[in-house]
Image 1 (cartoon, rainbow, N blue to C red):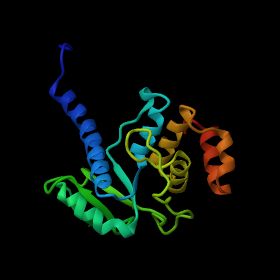
Image 2: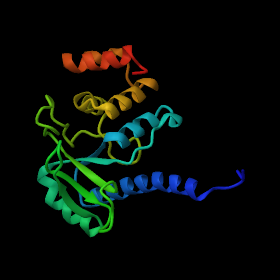
Image 3: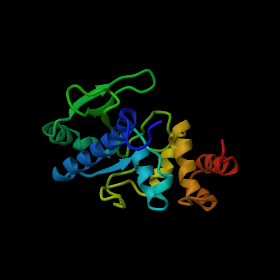
Length: 200
């Protein structure tokens, strides 16, 4: 087997990662140029925080999730569409009214930037709303939700991928058992469960 160079499949794998990173950077640039407050959330926020400790532990993600005020949505649409993105609202079985920006008119649904509205519940059954965009940090050169707010979001959603992201943060020492005191009893219980069962 020839291992001296790249293969078409390897190139596609690398391109997939680079496309997500490029979409993230372009989105941040567009929103900042438009003077809009935002913060990266989701898997890319987790990856950014994990990279501050151990870049080898960073997990790739296809999602670009951005926290944005609903009051700024119209301005964001104008700014993003001027940069080639296409605004869409998608209704699904589990969630209705998911606001996103497709990365071009021929982009697949996966090639999108998903909007999470600040200070609103992502799902009606959630007990805690998403954080405000006013608080953010910039460890990766773009605005990222503060670590504690990110952990709270993950403990609120608590899907399989959220548990994986929390384990990633636990694994590099970003968070530990002392963090349980920062959250409400249910969130503290969820975090302690992950600490007690790191392998799931």
